[in-house]
Each structure stands twice: as C-alpha cells, then as structure tokens.
Image 1 (cartoon, rainbow, N blue to C red):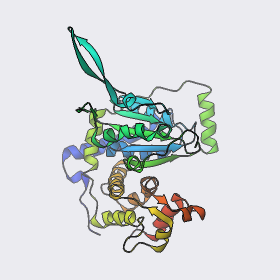
Image 2 (tube, helix red, strand yellow; image 1 turned 135 degrees about the vertical axis):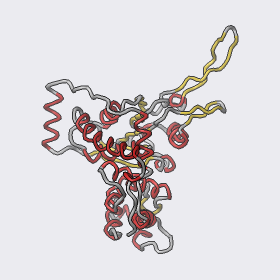
Image 3 (spheres, rainbow, N blue to C red; image 1 turned 90 degrees about the vertical axis):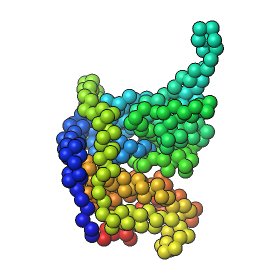
Image 4 (cartoon, rainbow, N blue to C red; image 1 turned 135 degrees about the horizontal axis):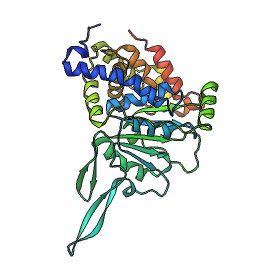
Length: 337
C-alpha cells in the first residue's frame, strides 16, 4: 500500500489545529457527559458530521435524548441553535422565511423576514412528520447553504448543519423522506436504549439535581478551520479504492455485481455515498489522533453511511433480510486488503 503523507507535515498551523482537536475532544467529552450518559459512538458520529461540514439524520425511539444531544453539542461549540418542530401543517415558509409588506417612510415595500433555518445548528425535530413539500424546503439549504425567496438568494450563516431526528416506530401521521433528501445526510445514526447501569445513572442524576451548564469550548471559526483540516487528511489510493468498491457493490444489475445483491437490492448507494464515506473516514481518523485514513475508518462508518441509501427488494424483505444484515454481509465479503 502506498504511504500517505501526514497531516502534521503540512504546515505549523495545521499541526497546531491537529493538537487543538486532540485536546479539545477530551474536554468536549467531559462537557457532554454533564448531560449525556453513554452513547459514545453516537457522539463520535455526530462530531464527524460537524467536522466534515455535513448533515446528520438521527433515528431513535422517543425519550432517548436525541434533542438533548443536539442541543448540548450546539452549546459546547457555542453555535447559534434553532429548533424546528416538524408537524403535518408546517409550511415551507415557516422554515425558510417569507416576505412581508412593510411601510418605509410612507412607501410600501416587501421585506424578507428570515425563518428559523438561519442559524448554525438546525434541529429538524421529527422531520418525517411533515409532508414531502415541506421537507423539500430544506434541500437548497442543505446543499447550497442558501435560501431563495422571490428570486433573491440569501446566504445561510457559516458553519451550517442540519441535524434531523425521526422516530422509527410510529407510522401514523408520518411521511417517508424522499430519497433525494435522504442522500443529503452523511449519516443515519441509530440511538438505542442504554445499558442497565447507564440508564440507572440517568434516572438517579436527573431526579436528584439540575444538570450542570455546558461550557462552550469552540466557536464557529474553529469549526470552519477543523473542516479545512479534515479535507487535508491523506488517504492512500488503495484505501480510497476500497471505499468506492464497497459502495459500488450495493448496486444491482451492474457488471460484477454479486448475485445475492441482484436478488436483494432494488436500489444501491450512489456516488455521494462514496464521497461521504471517505470524508467521514478522514474526520474519524483526525478525531482519533491518526494522521491518515485506515481501512478500519472506512469499515466502521459503512453502516451509518449506507443504511439510509439502500432499498431492499420485496423478495429480500419477505425473506426477513434487513439493511443492517446486507451491510454486514458486504463487509464480510469485502475484507480490508
């Protein structure tokens, strides 16, 4: 395997940023522990999205601290936070903003009033409870980091993240997210129930005292610098090729596609999945103090990157297959070289 150069060898400022991230992560974990117990893998995946400048979909049952987690991260990074509760009657203008008629020295004119999307961290709470028309109002914001109203473009603040939550167990009053919007999320992070000891700690802590305030450790300028450093993390050609081959193996009816994939999949992951997999692996390596991407970084992020981008066939669902089992089998059949 070709030997990649290291992050530290680039410039002194990059080396200083590298050290800042390593020291800051430990402090960040201590701050988040004031309100969040356990869920270390979930927190790491959320940080990877932030350091990559991408968006994250968080899936979990009610009462698992999804909203609290997002709010706590925003506080730790001293970012402007905005929460949008998605409901069936929510309109696109309720998110992006609207023009209103105002009186300016006796002259009437239209003035754009920004909506709640104009913040650094947007919590799209229960995003699957609003119809596709309203869901799609976030597409331009997530992809272009801007909002267009009456033909005029309004840039969103930097950095900008959409962290959406959805409840996987309720079907009444919910709408599936369009594939085009799902693809804009780097990860689909699953939050599960805590182990017994962690759950006991949460119950005792939350019923006996008020939570300690979270101290901000970074600001928006720091995040933008971290995002720039993530893209400088080197990756060997063989490791990048592995990521592309792994994503390509999910696509049915392609040359060299495995036979069981043809039977199991209706639709596979696209090019953006490979991009997100490599970018996320770079951020993971940086957060863990590594100076280049390893196969382990790619394989560990395959599930959150792919689980919302794969569509099983009816035959596969009838046989009891799940997206998680398909991803596991792919990883078994594509070992790191």
